[in-house]
Image 1 (cartoon, helix red, strand yellow):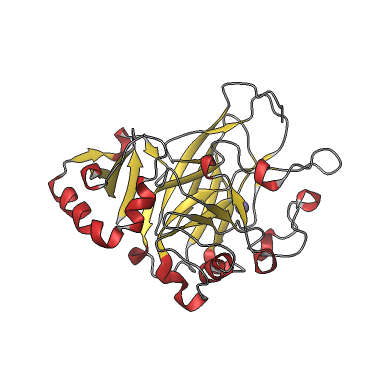
Image 2: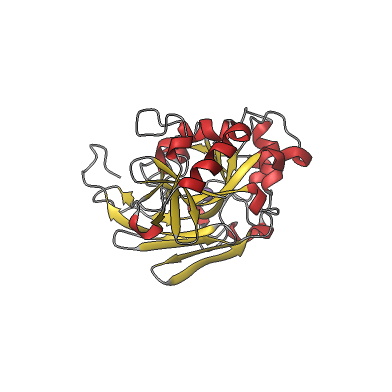
Amino acid sequence: MKIAVFNDHRVGLVEGDQIYDVTDAVPDAGPAFPAVYMSRLIDQWSRRKADVERARASARPIALSSVVLRAPNPFPLHVLAAPVNYHKHIGEIGARSVSGKSSAVERGFFLKASSSVIGAGEAIRLPRGSTRRFDHESELAVVIGKRAKNVARAQALEHVFGYSCLIDVTMRIEPGKFDEERVARKSFDTFTPVGPYIVTADEIPDPGNLVNRLWVNDELRQDSNTSALILDVPGLIEWASSVMTLQPGDIIATGTPEGVGPFGPGDRLRMEIGRVGSMTLNVVEADEFAPRRF
Ligand code: MN
């Protein structure tokens, strides 16, 4: 099942190039703050799934190309992200790295602001007037399905609801000039595109063998496979749940392969995760100058 959020917080199931509106089966779906209805739907999935399937059976198809895809979970409680988690990414950004030679095995995870999440139909907005370097990081996203605390890797995948594509947009440090905290550099509004929808875990029996690719305009920049992850999906859940209670709807960005690089306003980013899907986002400048310039 491919579950999307579209237009003004409608919930839909994607089948081919059509989407079926099942919002009536999702309690409290809508733009009211905080928009936690997807986290709640995921939490209650075992008893809500039949309602969603009934709503799908009576829904008329809408052309996917006619809707705006939003973040498939607009309000995750946590967005976790793995630092260095592909061997060939180690060292490629040189002195701009804050992780040195260690990987997610030692470093675990960091957090991104959940407010940085957007959908596949939205635009990445870079700080207006900036001359800094902004990089794309193409990543498999894991969406947590069941509360997870101290979950060993053997049971980890039982706690996964589904998967999605995710771009971990990052403002780089500049050694000797700029050295902001990582959470700030990765938490600008729009810096975590997720989409185009959540593919439920039953369709992805092995998250450890999925193509991971990203293009800037039509140039292939990143081309790897989740089989090259240093700390795999079960390992990431074991590590993170040893620290904190993962909640339904939480998103884990599993780390980027080699090929990260800069992009700017006017560019178009396309990324693909095998069996999951692909999304294309335009890059623009933010409408307003921030009082603190970057
Ligand atoms: Mn990343």
